[in-house]
Length: 249
Image 1 (cartoon, rainbow, N blue to C red):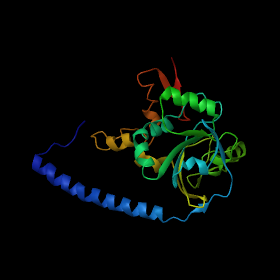
Image 2: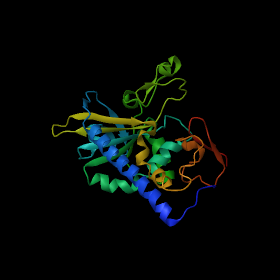
Image 3: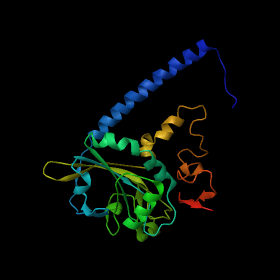
Image 4: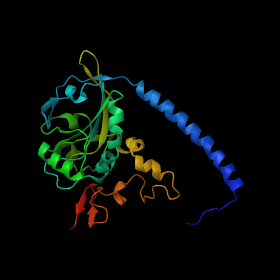
C-alpha cells in the first residue's frame, strides 16, 4: 500500500480532526435511532404459523415470554441446495449477543421458507444455536417484503426495501423485522430493514472498518466477493450470482 507517512505529532493532529467527524457520526446515529423508535406501529391482524422443533407455534409465541422480537429473514427456500453467504455471515455473528438480548427483553429468531427438516440439517452442520423456525406454507415472508411469487418476479412488480426491484430472478431476499407484543397479547410490526440496512449488526464489518484496507471489497457491500460459510474457507467452491455458495469438492 502506498500511503502517507508522517510524524507522531502530525498523525495526532489528523486523528483529532477525524475524531470530531466520528463524534458527529455518533450523535447522528443517536438521532436516527431515536427517530426509528418514534415510527408508528402496525397491528398484525393476520394469523401466522411456524414449524419449530417443539411443534407448531404462532408469531406471538415466538416472543418466548418477552415483549420484543427481532426476526432475521434468512434466504432459504424449499429444496434450496446451497446456502446464502450473506445470511450465513450475519447469523454467525449473533450467537454471543443472544444471552444479552434475552436478558434485555428481546427475543431473536431466524425465519426461512424452507421446511424445518432442511433448516435443522443446515443448522446442525453449521453448529448454529439460535432459534430458527420454518414459515413453509405461510404468507409471512411474502407479507413482510422478503419473498416474491412467480407473478411478481415475471411482471417486475416486486418491491424490496420499499422500492421497485427490477430483474429479480430468485424468490427470497434477506432482511430483519422487529415486533412488539403488549400485555394483552396484541402483536405490532414496528420496523423492518433490508439490504445494507443491517450492516451495523455485522461485527466483522465493524472491525474491518478499523483497518488500513477496510472492507476491501471491489463492489461495496458485496459479501460474495470474499465471504464464505465459516466451514468452507480454504475449500474449493464459488458463489453464484444469487449469493449462494456452491462447493466444488
